[in-house]
Structure formats: C-alpha cells, structure tokens
Amino acid sequence: MIPLSQLPLEKARSVRVILTDIDDTITTEGMLTASAYAALENLQRAGFLVVPVTGRPAGWCDHIARMWPVDGIVGENGAFYLRYDRQRKKMDQHFWASPEDLKKNRAKLDAIEKEVLESVPGSALASDQAYRLADLAIDFCEDVPALPESEVDRIVAIFERHGAQAKVSSIHVNGWFGDYNKLSMAKTFLADAFGMDWEEAKKSVIYAGDSPNDEPMFEAFPLSVGVANIHAFEHRLKNKPAYIAKGHSGDGFAELAELLLNAKRRQAV
Image (cartoon, rainbow, N blue to C red; front, side, top):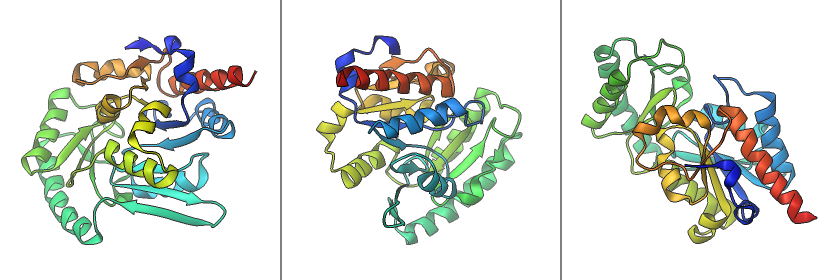
C-alpha cells in the first residue's frame, strides 16, 4: 500500500466520485466527528459526487440519504441503494431482491441468528438489526466486549454452512442470501444515478474503506484508499487498497478529502 500523500496529482484530478465506507472510515470509535462531516460537505460543495457504501441498515440509510451532504447511499453491503431527490422530495430506491425473496431470506436468516447466538457465547444481535431489511448483523465488538478472532471465524462459518454470504466489518459479521456485494450494487448505482459505465468508473471513482467487507471495492477500483486502521485487518485481505492514509478512521477520510480538494484548487489556478 502506497502512502496516500504519493497519489499522483493527475490521478487525484481525475476523481469525480468518492465512494466510501462509513464505520471506522468516516466515523471514529463510533462517533461522526466534526472534521469528517465537514470533509463530506466540503467535497460535495466543491462538485464531487459523494456516496457512502456501507453495511449499515436501511433505516439508517434513509436518514443518511435525506440529511447528510451525500448524493446517494448503498446499504446493507449492497442489498439496495437510496437516492433522495431534494427538488422532487422523493426517495428513489432500488433493491437487489424482490419483496417475496426478502421475506423468504428473512426466515432463513432467523434460523442462522438462533444458531449463532446459541453457539458463540458473547456474540449478540447488532443493535441496529431492527432497521435491517435484507441481512443479519452479528455484533462482535460494537456493543459487546470484543470477541477473539477465532470466534469471529466461527460466526462466518455458520453463515456459510447455511449457504449465506458473510463479510466481516470492523464491528459486525454481516450475512445475507443473494449474489451481491458492495461492488455489484455500487456499479448499478453509478450507472442508474450518474450514467457512468464501468470503464469510466475505473478512471474517475475513488473508494475509501477500512475492513474485509471493503475488499471487493479495493480489488475493483484502481484508485482505492485504506484509512490507517486497516492495518488491523491486513492479514485478512487478499486484495488491499492501492493507497493508505496516514490518519486513522475519520482523520484518514478527512486527509483524503483535503488531498482531492487541493488537487481541484490547483487545477482551477
């Protein structure tokens, strides 16, 4: 991973869209700091398109799409995207699965939930599970004492034994049924919302993240950035981000924002 400070100016100037994880990438120890939120707002005001791509639930994503300075959001690790049109006062949404499939998948996830909580002491249902539509989130360190890595692996194994996908974030194991992830829905969103094909996206999109569930994005986008706390998951990553910020969490995201904003200012001179 190359230090972010060494990102060539020409590549920084090519960026039009910032896709970014939220937990421990924009937030810091569970908090949205003023500097990280200001970075989002400053990017959008400068004309960048800003889109969080997160494992967080539909209920949170509705709030973020409406109230944060963003141009849309991909939620529940790719289960859907939301885009709030402020002029029409209308929420545009797209789900990977049909309502019927969501209902069937929920019954299967309920069985996995029961097995995980009975089999892995110390694990818990994520506090935001009530606001989820498509996945199951098991907390291993957000609101519970941190579990050993071996127990996190046990949770993943239970999901996979039931035929579900499972991804480890910095706080949860998220599992779902369906052939999608952050990348597949991000591609759909870029095409639907911005008319951006994949070849254009690879040149003009940068992705920021911090954990294994960001790996499809790190692999796909030539311009990808890990905030410094990604070092804690480095041994789990086959595909690492191309660049790494000096700052941790929200400070790292603010570092990326300032680099992009400076590149744009220099271009305007």
